[in-house]
Image (cartoon, rainbow, N blue to C red; front, side):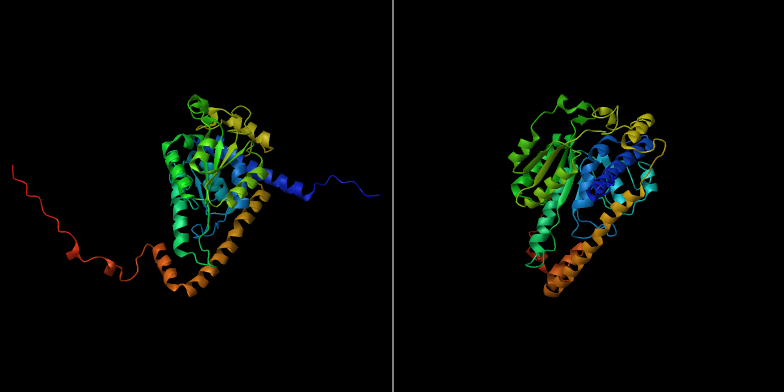
Length: 374
């Protein structure tokens, strides 16, 4: 007779660990904002499942070399939710420590109140004004297409990275997003995969105060591939939607996901009170109880969570090594193009570039205006 057991199956263990990972990001974000007494805790708590899928399952990146050329680019257009991004950068092994997380929004820290390019490793774009990151991501996508058109050759697909972004209701309200989205659809930028955090909340209150359009239909009209998910906590559905978007190579993709701002906060969930202000010390304790954390402990990262994310981040070492070998083979077959690319990467021009400029004598001479003196 077989012995009965209550030991969970391996799949259940994995799901339990993944949920602990997601909840760790939520609690870490709430702690950092509370310690700073300033910031935005609600959106990181809502979109943590999206980040979990992106950084542990989808994106190609190398924390040891954040500027690896063929890495996927991530843009947090909802820059006010930056504790979300800082959490994943720290957890996956970028040059960001738990002490840096504790110094969120402090003077001279590596974790300012919005993502800043050049200040924090792993930040691709400075995002503050709503819509700015959305539009910058379109520019990054055009850049990838230009690199691919110039340098990719049969058997040498050097540049095939995607642009991922998370954008908010506020981004969707901005004119710059509409203009950029229209252009991306027209150009067929299939290397764009944007996730829309549809939480129905702005700092003034519910979005229905001023905004009730059908964004899915609007983006379909722009020529985008659009998917709509009803549950922002369903990591399986999020992963499948992103994979479908990856297979759609002729159109940019938008994945609209219904979320609940400050998910896990008994009194602040789905309220503007979680937008742009700390939850409050008592509420943070309730959040920790909800997720099974010790209420009186702060900035806790379980060892198995750190190990899970560091393992995810370490995959980029092999990805970059493979790309470097491909580029060396490319250099042997296409030495001039390889040299041109490397020079451009360093902001240099090839030797003798000035010889291609027309001589000054062939340029029209400018006549000086002869103004009478007063």
